[in-house]
Length: 493
Image (cartoon, rainbow, N blue to C red):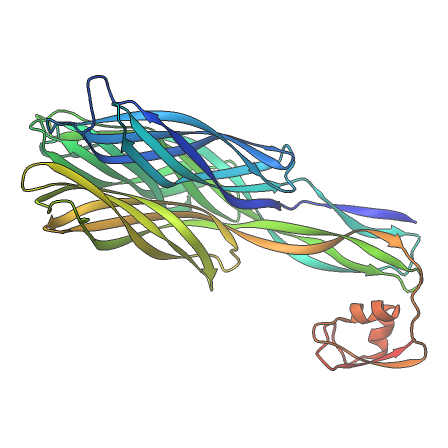
């Protein structure tokens, strides 16, 4: 006997999970500056490299923290500090050379004063990792020398994501901002709203959301929130059944052009990636037997993954946040910032539900003229359409908070939550990858009436009694390939 093989091209899901990395350190304010009050802080995190080794993932990345603080004199300053970090994740079944996709996000962030002029940093980073393998899957296709071999296969649909374009485009805008003399802190997010085929390429539209804390020449704080729309046409390298796009900002610059101009200049590089889905199918062997030769099937449990699309959405929310006990009332609410932390993701009937917290920080001035700030966690829940075959998503969320009013013990905040998702479906299958000869088991003989169980097939019955499937169908011309519970099958064994 000689085993015959097929090599199937399918994406295997090797590992998917979330791990946490802790980052602690000290932040040094600019020379001559001392933070009497920490007003706001934010962090951006990135994974620069992620290497798959046997049984583990090795990550190197960086965290950049921007702090806004008030001095004893009442002056406000800001500074930025960056730190590198490394992290190792234990990941079963991972081998060197496998493809790793790591999405980092800030789960918690704390900046505190110390006894000296420095500030202490403590951060927890969530790292969502997906490891896949594109190595061909070797499965049994037949056995030479067994003339009566029968095999049961299933046609599995496949959809592979392919990158059709990767282009970086410079985005620039001058934004009116009356009285803004300096930008202390900013956050910029880009969201793709729509991707469509156009003139042989891709038309991508969306918006950049900018949230900046500015200061006038007189030292007054003000908030600038703007949505900057864009529409770009990008050439594609190849074709696909359908496309979607993702975008990321880098080299972001937000600066005031001076009080006399009342303009804020925004510049950034936007990296657009256009993905296409190429659909197909493959025949996966699930079972095999021979009426004349006894053998057992050797199986391998495969975990396959398919790309099923991508989309983005924006959700608006309005909430009131309250001043904690021990702090004075709000006289003027100046600025709000928010970071989104996702706590759960669920799929049901073509919708993805995302729940989490908006870690909101408010800077305000009391009636005595002093600046204060506090943090409140605001829960959120959003739903977005997802392909029905979705099992998981590579999800990125962001949030902009804007002060719409405030006084006394309460401030009114308007939130804009962005979610961008790439959706994937999972299929688990036990495939036949070989056979092993074994001794024959005793079987019944003569005429047998077999009571089928729901879901059994003619193949299953034939294998049970070591009969050719064609013979079973010939004796039972009124039954279909799949049997119902209690169906009676006539057999001559």
